[in-house]
Image (cartoon, rainbow over all chains, first blue to last red; front, top):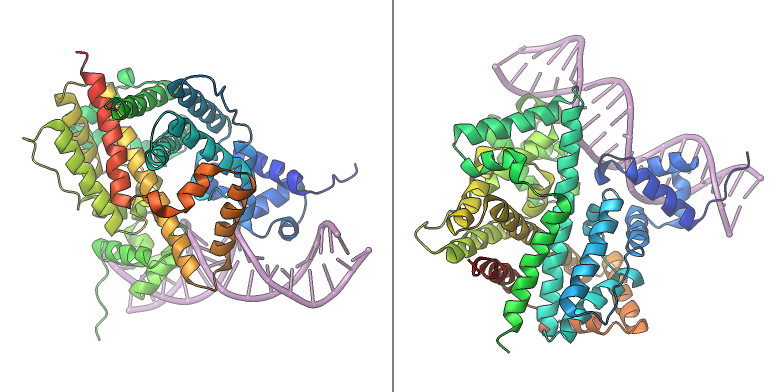
Length: 220
Length: 220
DNA sequence: ACCTGAACACCGTTCAAGT
DNA sequence: ACCTGAACACCGTTCAAGT
């Protein structure tokens, strides 16, 4: 079979595919991408200056999937929708939240998204710096939640594999410490009765922040 | 001079010292710790099962510095104070936020802190799951903020060093894209007139979340 | 009980050399 | 213009061997 031509976008696609098979962003490597493309690792350096540049391109590719809601909706609903879209896109692409955090937004796609979110808030009546701060708050919260989720998933899959003793010991330790030290609330959270689904957890956090924003606005 | 005895706590201290000289958590390595202790890297493995275990011990050491405020204060003030304490401790130890995110809390120190924060919220009248969600929200927000801050600092120091062309190009790109694409709010944030100090940025984000929490509580 | 040295299987990145 | 192979300076981790 004829060998597929190599190009920037080719490498980006292969990188995303490679990342999705990795256990974490840490395990993602140039050499693995090269293997999936059946080329030498050094070839990638003809298209990308370094690993960081490739990671940025991957982040851009993912960010491009995020849709902007209708600007005619009220600002709370617009915010709710963008961040829901972001949540869905991050959830669809394994380790994308890590990717966003590891990577500085300097591209058109990413800066446009940031600008758009600030705009919603400024139009709603917030100051430029309030808007910036609110945007960061939600962004950090979202990224943190997604990262934590993927870590939990990693542990869960570790618990399923009977071989993975690491996940087991970690879990056992939490159980032991929380009973030994009578950490009531940790014990409660272990009986996962009251643990919400990721999406609900996200929605309740976002609601909290939106509530806070509205309280900030109302005095005026 | 007589060679200092090696011990777990010895290694932890040397590790923290080593980390503080690293550009990021990624650059931290077992071999570098060994060099600061003037021992062979393999020696560390007699005291710690693996790198992850060492990182956890480092995270615990830092967490131990976080003071619990007086439980007689009202819940908003208690929350404000713990998270301020956390902010200060994270700020004092370079890359500690990354450390906390990379590491699963299974130790007594860290679980106790989590339990304490949830307790404040439960005593304030929130449900166990609301409390958990609020705690996560603040925690994520804080870690995200600190990580972003240290990344910015890295870039700043890069800009100071005339040699570091990477930081320069990144910065130039943001400037170019935001003017080319007329991203008004990004341009505004570049004229750092309206950018708050880290501490104030943190306080305003925390206030937002606390406001949201209070709005959640008031209907009852 | 504690520590080392060599080894293994990995990294990112460079660069002369090939087509 | 594009791609490779070898090399360099790094990793985490293991394990036989030393004291």
